[in-house]
Amino acid sequence: MEQTLEQYDAALNKCRDIFLKKTKDYGTAWRILRPKSLTDQIFIKAQRIRTIEETGENKVGEGVVDEYIGIVNYCIMAQLQLEMGASDSQDLAYEKAEELYTTKANLARELMIKKNTDYGEAWRDMRVSSLTDLILMKILRTRQIEDNDGKTIISEGLDANYLDMMNYALFALIRLS
Image (cartoon, rainbow, N blue to C red; front, side):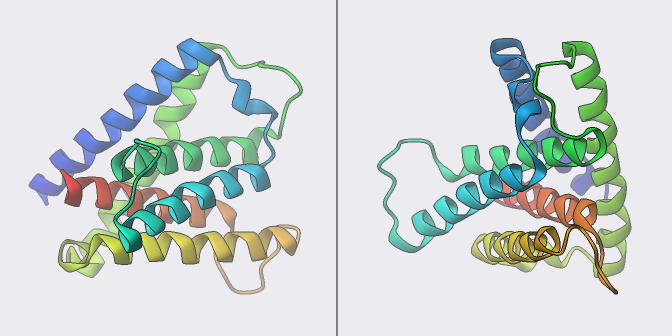
């Protein structure tokens, strides 16, 4: 488990670094997006990964690693938007965005440790393409929950699905490194 934590933290730190650099460049323009829009952004990233996996073609230039990083960061943004709601302005200071990112990243890490213990690191034996498919399935579940106004009868909610997608993307980043 120690190796997993080191690899997980390294992948997460790479995602965090990109998030923070983009926050310096763009501010928190993502605050205008509703959670549904962020779900669609995650879908676009995951669908692009799947297309590249199936066709072997990459005409845009950014590889699947960049897309998995995008999934991680969009999942954190979506979790934050679930809590704070969309805003018409960039009302989040850089330092606060950094603090909130860390809070959500720590939640995902804690969940990963629990599930990884229960599942015995089964993800290490999975194909990366299966991790992509699991992300796409979670997106479809998330969309259905969103269409149900966020209500579930027995299932986990939106936040849990974003955490799972984030962890699957981090597992893929570890596997690809």
